[in-house]
Amino acid sequence: MDLYHLTVLLAVHCLCLLAPFQFTWGALWVAISLYLVSGMGVTISYHRNLAHQSFKVPKWLEYSLAYCAVLYVNWAFDYHSRFGSYDGQLMKNVGDLECQLYYRFLHYTYFLHSILLGVALYVAGGLPFVVWGMGVRVVVVSQITFSINSICHTWGKQIWDTGDASKNNWLFGLLAFGEGWHNNHHAFEYSARQGLERWQIDTSWYVIKFLQVVGLATDVKLPTEIQKKRKALAKNSIMKDK
Image (cartoon, rainbow, N blue to C red; front, side, top):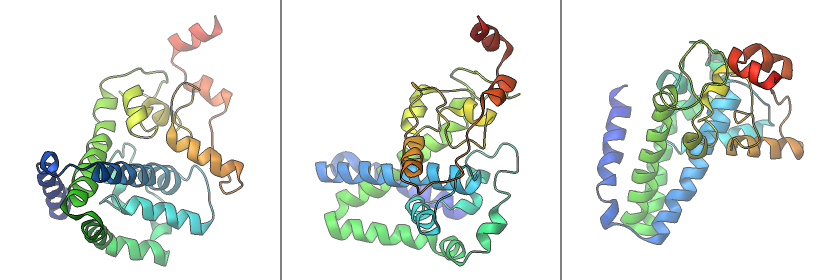
């Protein structure tokens, strides 16, 4: 981790120390709102759209989703190098992003957007909005993101034969907008849907599905039943056949 990201993480953790003394209901709702916007921006834009190209949307919407993710203090060009690259090929399309002026602009200015957001929060609600909207919110999103590659490789259930320790964890399926169904993702990394069963809550997929229904999301990739059978662990395959 470079000095910039280390400094940012240290700063937001320090801000969190002020949270009990700067609590207001308005600040809490700001934190929750930004958690939803920036967190789902990361999962829908950075991960499923830009990294895995699991669906397509019009450029104006693609850029808008990417900007939502910029409100979290990281950027897509090195997203997987920090948060979950396990095959070294997930960001092979970075060259395509670098060819686009908008993404080059975000790449060189993304830290400024966080600063501007902090200023806007201070103007709108003073220190409580900054502490909760920047400090608490960024720490929560960061810890959840880090946990995907640690906890979801330690605790949970493995359904698919992926040749690794990835597991499905229902708690992080909820907290990380569907990213906690990590064994599903390792098995079908191209899939726009990570919660493959009806009971596997995948908020990011619900948004993508809505965009597909209204005609904004196209080329939505999902695993076929044949692909699922090929990836199923032998013990699970036998149980299903019964």
